[in-house]
Length: 269
Image (cartoon, helix red, strand yellow):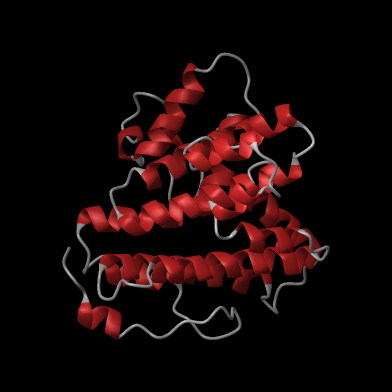
């Protein structure tokens, strides 16, 4: 894998502080368009797409006549056989096929959960080390929190968990307090503490701080490869997410904003 020494060396240091100055993710993506290969640019795109998942699920549930789902996804792509369907990432093509071949109506929640399952599966199958490890961490995080919420209802827990790895199977078999659940997923102990917080804003902020730290762990022994660039881009996405929350020009109820963020960040909410 080729390195990107001069580019990476010139990137400003980042800290998990949305109020500090940082490069907008879109600006970095524009710079990367002239640096990375088409395959690597597709990896960058995969990291950016989750912000559009909820509009996609809402669109497919409502069968809107809108010409576009989001600013980057045309509505025409969500119909089998359309010219633009083939230009969607593989996981979205699978979602289109699943939805159009599914009998009966589907709720936005059902579509969103399937969307997350297919997205995480594509990360795990991407062939890129960063995306694979990030996808594994995201899948484990979502499933641990979902298992914890549905601990007393085995049927609900089975319904809520996203399939994709052996940790999913462990969560179905054991309570989240069991030693094996914590030993097989290092972040479990930290998530247990975070999930116990009653302040929604603090809890969601700490979850993203954990995700930020996870990127550092994934790339601990990476130096001047595309994996560092992907991790940097994902960190910018996290910062941008919180910059929007703390925007002083927006007069909003932070609790409502965080509740909306939690619905986006937790497939079972």
